[in-house]
Amino acid sequence: MDRLADFVKQRRKEVNLTQEEFADRTGVALTVIRKIEQGKTNLNLEKVNQVLAMFGHELGPISIQESLKNGDS
Image (cartoon, rainbow, N blue to C red; front, side):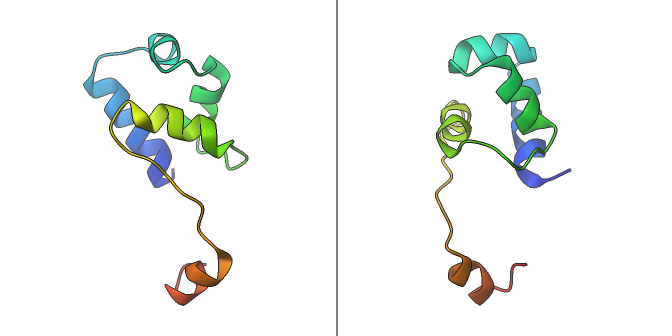
């Protein structure tokens, strides 16, 4: 699984919320929560940030050049 999926699932469980309760609290559709936790890659950044905001985090866009410069592939 990927880091985002693991992070969201672990944090959700730490606050003792089901996926349904978490969706209600974040205002994001249950299907989006499931996609994030399953590691789906075709996600809307705005929706991901809505979820991460509950834990005080945010993702931003990363340029391809920056990613290559850092050795990511």
